[in-house]
Amino acid sequence: MLSAFGVQAGDTRTVTEPVPPPPCQTLYARETDDATQAIQTALNTCARGKTVHLAASENTDTFYSGPLSVPSGVSLAIDKGATLRAVANPARFDTGKQTCGTLDNSGKGCKPFIWIKNAVGNGIYGQGTIDGQGGAVMAGRNQTWWQLAKEAQKSDSKQNAPRLIQIDNSSDITLYQITLKNAPNFHIVGNRSNGLTLWGITIDTPAFARNTDGFDPMGSTNVTLTHSVIGTGDDNVAIKAGNASTSHISIVDNRFGSGHGMSIGSEVNKGVSDVDVNLLTLNGTTNGLRIKSDRARGGLVTAVTYRHICMENVKNPIVLDTRYEQKAQGDSLPVFRDITFDQLKVLTAGTLTFQGDSDSNPIVTTLNNVTLASDSAIHKKYAILQGTIASGATGSCP
Image 1 (cartoon, one colour):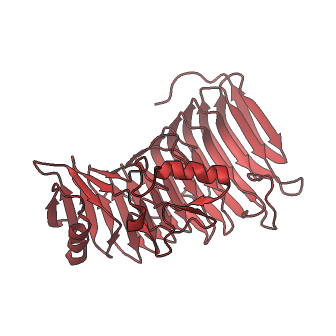
Image 2 (cartoon, one colour; image 1 turned 180 degrees about the vertical axis):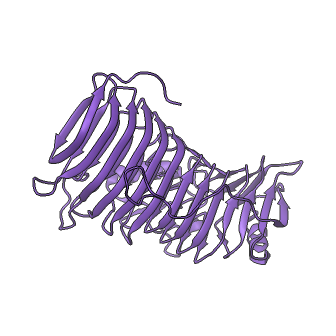
Image 3 (tube, rainbow, N blue to C red; image 1 turned 135 degrees about the vertical axis):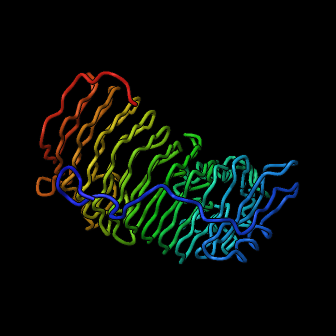
């Protein structure tokens, strides 16, 4: 895929609307406290290339479950009207150190709710809902997962809380039409994977729910997020590269509501490149388009294009910040090069920040057809801005 600016950008695959695989088995919701064993057995016995369906029954529409592992080649579908809900019991998600649901300096004490690992050709489909119950009081505790995250913030520690969907070392993975809500931690993480397609998904979690990123591709390549709506309590999307390089990412035709915006970073140690963000509407995010890093986790971020972007009620429409953590120390310098904004409209006054590292390591960015609302502010230091920015944006976002 060639961008309008002559650089290779975005997913190199030809991505079309997914077609769910045929079913191998349908489970119907029962009035029972725990469906974990039934769902896991169905997944384990399902043939490759087929799907386990979860469907509402006459008596109930909800499946309660502990952590689930999806075998390679097998898919899971939550049918319309059905909900797969995580049990709010830290002991069920514990990795063996009895730290899930507590604070420490690691934050790695919980298994994810749904884990796809070392897999090829999996998917999560359906017009139903996966609910992480982040706002539910944990069993044996007097607080919710989200309250635990707030406590971690106050004590400068890390909460042990499960991610909703974790994809590790996998390829050709699809999420289609599913609704995700109330994750205790990140909603979707794609780690060291190749070929991730998220099409027509919805993420709906309150703005106050800390550390509930919508989608974090990290150390991955050939990723497409499209036709989706994301509202959450942290980054709507955060592209990261702390453990391996991340490249060829397409974020196309999406709408972001509450959250911290369309982010790259802060972990970019191994480099981020060839990112195409096109046809994005942001309304009510704290940040709009943000690239963030610092000397402790910096690296090269290059060949990033933002096209046909519209923002309303966004406090910080553009943030390019090489000093995300002011106290960060190290030799991993953030380098932001070949960052292009084209056809960008900001309808509510906000602050744009271009903060480079130094005179010898400035941000380099190009702005074409960028129009801001009157009274917008621009803060620029150690930055080279090529092009012009106009004032007086009017109208409404699509």
